[in-house]
Length: 144
Image 1: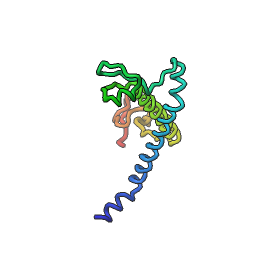
Image 2: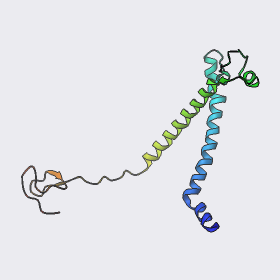
Image 3: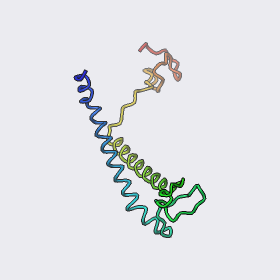
């Protein structure tokens, strides 16, 4: 049983998947840092000094000076600023994956399409592969 498990783990697909998950997690941390530390501060400054991570709505009706104070008081909050940062993280990751998949698709050789027509041997007009008679010259076609 241990040998079968080792064989399963050592197959190429499992190792590739493990590497992809680890790289994805690291890339996600980089994107989160980019969003929180580089992208959102200038956006917040342009919007009047808003710190998006501190945007929240207290559900108990009490006004708190900060999100940390509301959380420390145990108040229920809607943290829409944190959610906004998470959505921006997702959009950046999705766009990066789109660009990567697009580049990989361009590098792959185009697949040859199987033909759907053939030329009539009598009039040289394209006709469907399954045709038994040419619709243009009405000749009977030899069996394929």
